[in-house]
Image (cartoon, rainbow, N blue to C red; front, side, top):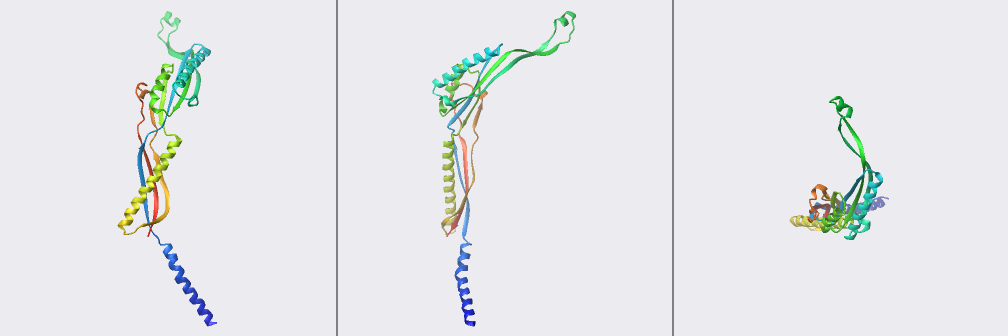
Length: 248
């Protein structure tokens, strides 16, 4: 009985001698945490601009008819210049009453020489406003398209903005995160070298942030002349990843 107990105790001791050091070694890894960063600039590949065609007439039907005629001329001009039909979108088609307001003096007041004047508004007709949004990848010719639309009857250039397509945004994101990860590896290897060690493997990695600059936006007043080439400015792109490396 005593022999059996002794054998069991010795077996347990041997088991602890073999397993515990391995457990301690596994859970006391030397690690280094590094922030990998990447910064670059990018140029948008899509331009969007909105136009409005505004017509006026004393009769609502006439204001609408005039507007449709001019709108068709603007749309046809854009199509003939290379804009695809699917890239021309009507975003609103509004008919509004137009009024003129001001001070007035009634004939009776003039005859009686009363000095009181009133203020009133009276309807003078109807205004029809048709707004169009045009999208194009041909950024270099945005000025030409705007000029053509204005010459065909568009009254206002309401806005112009540049942005990234989904494809290019995904491409830039992938590249930025890849290079941020490489930056983390380079930093970690430099630290490991200083410690006379080396990188064994990656324990974990997480994306800290990814961002790119705001869309370049221009109000109509900023578009001085459509004959002048309109070029978006370069914007900043940033990516950061957090990587935990295991050292040997």
